[in-house]
Image (cartoon, rainbow, N blue to C red):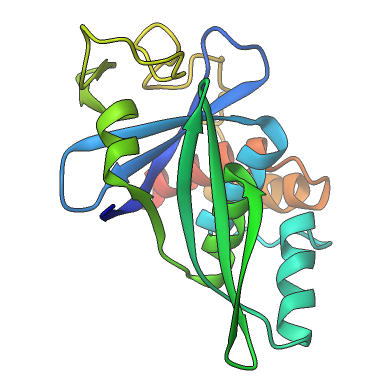
Length: 207
């Protein structure tokens, strides 16, 4: 089975599952997206890894794993989303130590959070993308096989919103200096969702 390389497109809030998020993976050499339901903690960890300027005052669980692996010369070479059963994605982390390769089972959200920290590529098999891939059109996601039985795959249009629907705090009236102070405060309080919103507002003002 041929492997397809994926890149992270973003994270959106699930409209139907309270406290859940959709991690959107993008086919590197194509237009299909692969949405995967993840929890709030995993979404936060992935978001922090994507936003290089946000540094937690203490290591998160995935940062701790990275520090542990670095200390013992373990390298994550790649992550493969290798199975889809009843809407649940299964992944493997391909690791290497002393030129010996090991394969470790992992939740897909954990595997991707670690792949980001190791700058490791993310792959899935073509048959999984054929089954669960969707095309993003406007603000909706349409399954590639809209008229076929998707075996309970959690990637149908009614499951996800393309944009976060929760209300955002307004920081438009704040100066850049005030926003940086709020950003530092949010990071110290480990409120990374708030930090990301403030960072976005800073980017708007500085652009």
